Length: 134
Image (cartoon, rainbow, N blue to C red; front, side, top):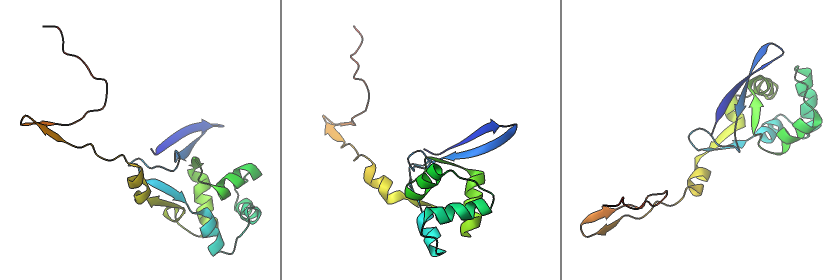
């Protein structure tokens, strides 16, 4: 599920986009495409990318850069995403790519509907309750 989080730091409101294991609000998986976009510009190492980001005004720790470079981040500040897109000369949708096929593969199969005695019986999730005493 995607969530936007507002936090106040040093008197300034900051917006974070939480990717939560790469899923969007509609349940679609997201693929983080930073390395491919960097490779298109000839940036092959995270240290080079970190240097370019620093030149653009975004100081990232080595640990955070490693996490951005090697995997899908769980959240990223929109300010940071804006600078990353500026450095890579791309749009956010080129870094965050939807993968609806991956979500479809993870969805459970639909329950079968049975007809018993002329009534349609659809299984329901949840606690089975007994009838109240008569």
